Length: 288
Ligand SMILES: [Zn+2]
Image (cartoon, rainbow, N blue to C red; front, side, top):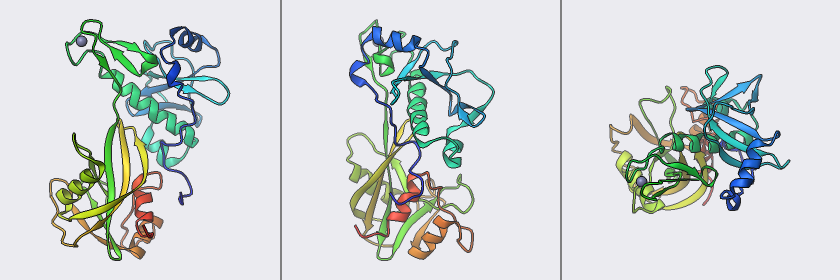
């Protein structure tokens, strides 16, 4: 990793204790323990007081989901919060670097799992109310016995190279001047490489191949896993899909370096260092 700070939302240091999640007595003890910590989630936000993550007990929460056990042996739980004060957006916290990286990573875990529970109170199969099992990693329907599991949605995020340039694009909704890697959800029945080739072709008209995996990043808005790739383009003939992109073009190494460093002469910018797109832009010019 060559960035000063690691990518946001990775680097979770908790022991997730997946093998013990079904032990109801153990969970009950952890929930009652005075040293247990509680991460409060309100949509994309959490509670931060005086620059520190608030981890006090939430008496109003009806359900708690186990995040894991920390090095000191304390359990961390996620819960839904109705708090209206001291709320901070997770993206803002990640860009700002206010909290330690491992706290951002458990916030990502908490945000994704709370979001999933908020939307799975009822069985997708028969409509009956479901109950929490396995410390929050399963919901079970008492009427039809269907089991429901938290989801993670794979997203391919990639740039392609052609000679001494890489392909970047921008969407209309982005901050002015920002160009980034292309990205899209992996579809059912598709490999990672096939998804990357399809997304690049659909969005930019560029045919590509020879993808290599770089790294991945949890992206808890609400539950994506960004799978970072660098591939090779077969041509430079861009034909953008205007529904997906406002613009796409080829960028040389010095221009990309200036965008990454914030010194581009016309103010073009890369995404912030906490995002996998930033790392991919930096690594794309290195030999495979
Ligand atoms: Zn059911």
